[in-house]
Length: 192
Image: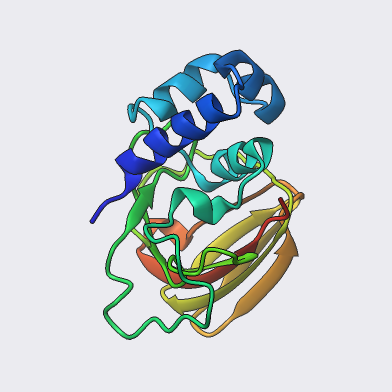
């Protein structure tokens, strides 16, 4: 199941419920009104950084856009194969091409503070990207392939089994090394 269309609808519903105009949401997130409108209308696929900024501005967890259940508060077990549902994102706010597929490992846990994902990164020849930051922290472990992370003025190459933990406020970009496919485990913490 691709939940990308549901994300735009949830953003619009939350923004309307909280009586925040598109102009105000754009100003508070640093996005343009056109970007917000295109995301809400499922024309553009947001990358993770703007989605985090939108969640923070709306006063909700990032997972609010990904949740499909609202009643579970106990321990959550995600068995092999249960995380097959994906949410696909662009890796760039202006690119509508879906090439990062997020498998949520805790979407039934509604009161969570961390967002654990398995992320499949498609092969991608496009080397154009821009760094962006958001509040919070990220932990990544490379499961398959090789990962390149641009973090501030540094570039890190991680191979299978390598991990990185960093403050997300520093502008960064995560992508597969030399356009090859990769798979990572990522745990993202964003304060509300």
